[in-house]
Image 1 (cartoon, helix red, strand yellow):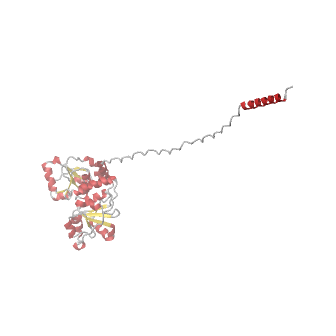
Image 2: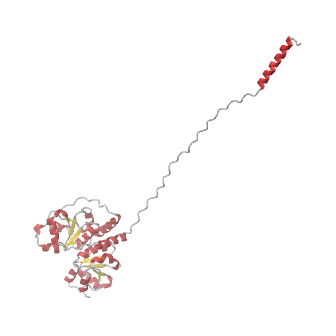
Image 3: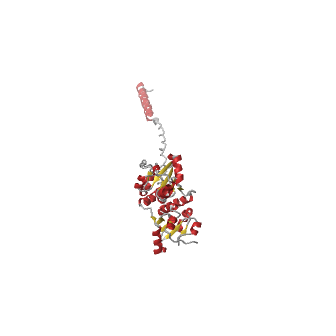
Length: 325
């Protein structure tokens, strides 16, 4: 039998062994913290790309010659029955019935305007005629007059090319108004002043026409030529010039200048190419009224053209030769 002391020692050894066995056991693994999944970042929305602006197209370059030709063609194609002329007695009637409905333009020299002009008329010199356009209304009848109608027909033609409602007083003050025998006391001596310039609001095509007309009128010459001078040119070298007769075919046949070509007035716009630009062109009508309109249209289209003073009336009054067909 073991002694009490021995027994206690054995028990201590057993307790120590158990304690060591407990200490040698594998500890439970520590619980690792669960990581929250990182939030998925949505890709930043890129601003929609705006379509690249296409460079503005350069406006098509206008062909000045074609523009001028087209305006001339339209001028003759839309010719009214009056041929853009108004008899003096009809001008008087308009002035009497409704003077506020008309604008009168006097293209004579300043001294003749000052000596007596139609009541209410403005002075519109030939050389600055396109400047006068800047002051004119577009909603009134414009009546242009001069001495015989040849300058005023050019003025009326220019205005109509620019879109104004304009006519020329047939035969002017000398051969149209004077025969009415109204007396000088019916004329006005005091000058009438025009208003300020207005914006004409021209299209690119109209700008071309306006520039061509400005060049023509600012040169200061109406290019009206005495019949005798034209006859001298014909005698000197008939092949060096072109005579253009714009009267009706029947009147041309009844008597015309030898060598003249005939293109009736209303056909000029569509037949202008039949006239050569190589030689000077002398235009004849009856009294210079329609020749004046044709003169403006030919000049802006590049012709070296002239009109005969008083047309075939002037030629016949000078007793110059004609031929018949």
